Amino acid sequence: MKKEKVILAYSGGLDTTAIIPWLKEHFDYDVVCCCIDCGQESELTGLDERAKLSGAAKLYVLDVNDEFAEDYIMPCVKAGAVYENKYLLGTSMARPLIAKKLVEIARKEKAVAICHGATGKGNDQIRFELGIKALAPELKIIAPWRMTDIWPFQSREDEIAYCQSKGIDLPFDASHSYSRDRNLWHISHEGLELELPENEPNYDELLVLGVTPQKAPDEATEVSMCFEKGVPVSINEKRMKVADIIRELNALGGANGIGIIDIVENRVVGMKSRGVYETPGGTILMAAHEQLEELVLDRATMETKKDLGNKFAQIVYEGKWFTPLREAIQAFMDVTQEVVTGEVKFKLYKGNIIKAGESSPYSLYSESLASFTTGELYDHHDADGFITLFGLPLKVRALMQQQLAAKEKKLMAETGTAVETTVSRVKTSEIKKAAAKAVAKSKKKKAAKKQSEKAE
Image (tube, rainbow, N blue to C red; front, side, top):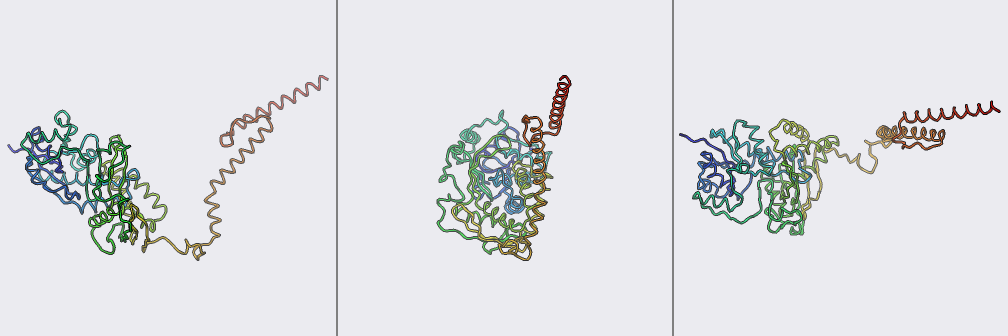
């Protein structure tokens, strides 16, 4: 009888390699491995041999670098999407694309399930599974790290021993190292000394894509970039596709100590986690894109775009890519990008991106208006009426406070006692009540005086 198939999201690391014989043992599936190449580079070496030695029936390696750059990275760049003011979503934006490709292979292979190696503490389990549920709700999802009754491994040594017991003898290192995720956009680092927030990162051992600002060259690197409708099209007058632009910016940024962040972030599952991210090219691209937007977008659009950009970042971080809300916000962003065309210039120097000028045919900057010299387009007298209307709510409130203060002062004079309230808190009903009491007291005094005069 032909066995059912499961699609395994395969990285070639120890965890997903151990999952292959484990799936065969506990589910009796034919395991079809699928590695989605989002820019892992050297991490893909030797995958085919490793997967087959581990018992996989087949291995797919799909190069999605261009799709990743154009359909997932660029919407985030256009939106200015940054999670918690620092994280440029390197892992988050890749997961929906991986989920999409896993579903495509599952349908091609007529598989009944998809398996991933994400842990039960992280965000990736959510991102993978929301993507799969949105695209193929009929498929079963297997998450070994949450199946603690039949997934007994607690350490790398346990996984290596298990593989060896199944006749899989591969050169895995039992020593612990940083947990990393790399793609075209970034590389993340977690674990070891980073697990304690009070520890300084060991950058000499940790960094992969570049150097610290202290070790960067003493001379600045000058760069120019051109954009068309929000999309980068060239670096230093050399046209290239988006993926190659990101690769070039990674090299330039890494050499100049750009894009290294140490962040404690709030995971979707409720805990805080600490990690170091290297995003040299992404940091430069986001800054250059924002530099051009400053020139061409009006104030109201920029304010709304910033608010929606924060929401877009949250959507992507939480794995809700395949939702109507993400599509709607992305459609708004695309409209704003119609005028984001032009050139930006900047310098890279020891971790800094220093602006060096920008230009655009859609520039909203007017020298005649902005210059300290009076121009033809601006009449200083117009400011009088503008300020009067713009400040009208403030003036109305101030007049109201003055009126209440006057009433309070009058009441104090009539009663001879201070009213226990401030101008901002005094209520009309309290004033009327106190005034009536004062009038009644005054009448009583007059009546008593008359009574006294009659008696005399």
